[in-house]
Amino acid sequence: MLLHGGRADGLAPPTWLNLPDRRLRLFGTALLRQLGDQDTLLACVRYRHRGWNGHHAHPAQDARDALVELADLVPAIPVILVGHSMGGRAALAVAGHPAVRGVIALAPWCPPGEAVAHLRGKTLAFLHDETDRVTSAHQTWDFADRAAASGAHIHTVPMRHGGHTMLHGARRWHRLTADFATAILDPDWRAPWSTLAQLSLRTGGA
Figure 1 (cartoon, rainbow, N blue to C red):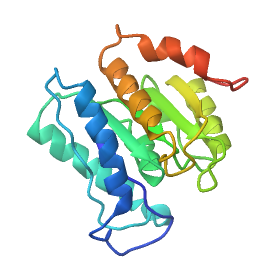
Figure 2: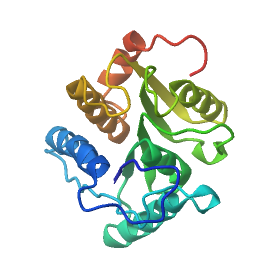
Figure 3: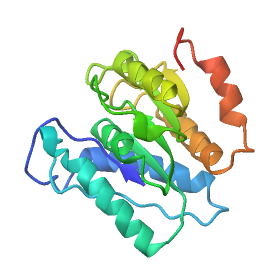
Figure 4: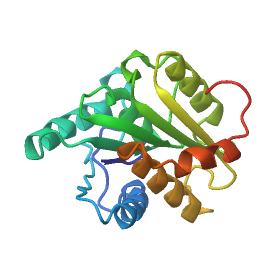
């Protein structure tokens, strides 16, 4: 399930052009290409509003509604949430849903103090370029550390390129996302986990 980015505030619906949605759909194409030999359903969450909008957390509400609809459509299907920026925040907020196997958070928006207790037992992969000027990679690592302390299975990858849009070096962002999705669905497929040990240059934490 794909959850694209947005903005902190905005009650208007996403525009017809909706570049964040189009950008994330390229990740969906990469996922389907790698998971093509499995029965895979790709879902894209359609937001009612462009913004998070404070305590309303509208994208998280929309993601919860989408999970309910998906469970009605395909009962017992394991779900991976792939969220970028605001969509990453929404994905992490609703990942306690029993159908959710894991989350791949791409340059996510992780403000200090976000809840993590509901993530116990979930597999979470975080990809973030530390030069990102829109969302903070350091806040992402802090969130990942707290989630790990609460019992989540954490994997963090500091990306060398891409900034917030993930356009520079896009192929690597797509490949790692598809690899993590495959590994979350099939715990015996270990390629990204071993690769991660070589990629992650962070000290401390998860």
